[in-house]
Image (cartoon, rainbow, N blue to C red):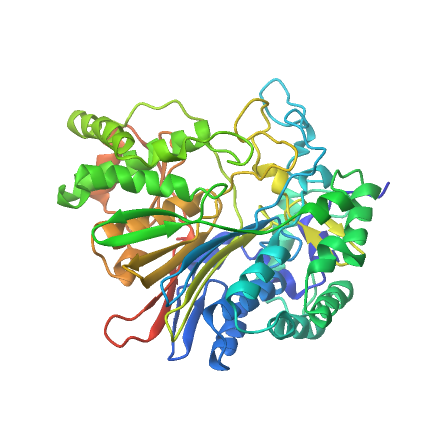
Length: 542
């Protein structure tokens, strides 16, 4: 049996690339603010790949063509975060004709998966991190199927044309910048000590991934990703799993389907927020917004608004951890969690917390993870797409189908390894993740498409942008640039830079344990209210 795990440095070598663009530390990557505006449209979220999407727009493509082209290319420019072997994601599409839809391309567990497949130690942790790194951590990749489904149903260009820039990127290679090479070496030596840790970081100059190039070229020539799931490429993927002790089979790949699904929606202040349904955590965002709506949130004094926002989000996190799972496999009380009676019940708890100057009492386990790429696109006609895709954490499972030059994401990691939980592993199940793209409409008109990158920070940050934009009537710029909170429901609270000393003292007095840290890197597009021109903005992470 070949060795199944690789350090970050080895992943850079295996995936070829150019690609080292993505291993720059989160703080550096998130520090940039990305603004984009032109009369053809706008694409934001992954700067290097977004140039490809904007070229598609300038040549007459629509927002879906641009977003799909950018998503495929992001696997080459940000390979530690996403790729064609990534575990998948979620997308929201809002068309200028008023149609709103969602694409679910989340990873699916193999048929052999069972709820007790990951042995736990005395502290409840998975022995050997088998759900995090290695072949058991990888499930059926959904990215290729999801992007093609979106393109086939709502794009205007064939896959071969949309894939052409990615093929070109692979053929040319991408040169990792100096600071990225240094960070890759630092991360590998600090976090992934191994017998190979003395190997030098990637050298300057362009690095090419020949097997990956050939696979993309083949898919483009066939104008279809079908063979990735049901053909010669699928057989190579299945053989790699079998060789290395993984559980994904040719039958699992053949059974996989990306799905068009109905978004969840919430009306507030004359606007409607639409977001991806489970297994996206969009339900959590809408639940928190429903509580704020019930509170009459915009009428509260500023400090009470801050407190109420935090408590609503914490309550939603607690419900997520208790109830969320794959709704095709387990019962999730979605209607109840979005009901006005539930919002009123939780509003009363928040009101008591405001009156008593304390947090809402909750019993909740902490959660944390990193990674992901989000892309938002708008065209001159007003069509919008928000798509989030990921490997999971850096380079996912850190295993590679070497014959294809393809790294696999770790979709199994997103399951709760404890048997009996709604989000426990299971045959064909899709795990709850942190990707929650959303769009906002007024009537039938799309106004805003938004999403984020950054693990558990994503639903919090996207929620904050939406709450400001919809609940307070903020502009896109105001909502995107306001300082954000980071919570997973416990009394540990992260604050992005920009919060006042008074706010910090207030939150500390309430009983929160404060720390400074990044928010998610949020990317949004809209049609400018004055000029009508498409524009985009990305911010966050500092």
